Length: 135
Image (cartoon, rainbow, N blue to C red; front, side, top):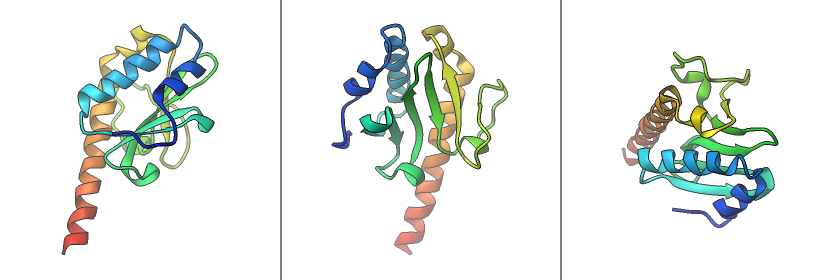
């Protein structure tokens, strides 16, 4: 499902030609791991965001952000993720990211593990919110 802010092709076009395969790989990874994801694209912020619903900070778990020399795979609640591979960077209260410079780095099983955990964490939180709303 896509929101109407923009399209992934706009984000991809912002990346250098060498980083476009990284963008594609990360998006495909998220799609494979969460076929029911919601994608919201914000071209002005150079990100494509993914979640269990449309709300960025409460329902989204990850984003693909284009930078000059890399692509960030960011996690909105990354500070709470288990990171045995030591991939996560950042010092914010919640946000963390992984700098991905090529497809080989994107193929790292530890990166896939972070995405799997982030999806599961948002689904659990979203389910709790829905349960509270229905009681």
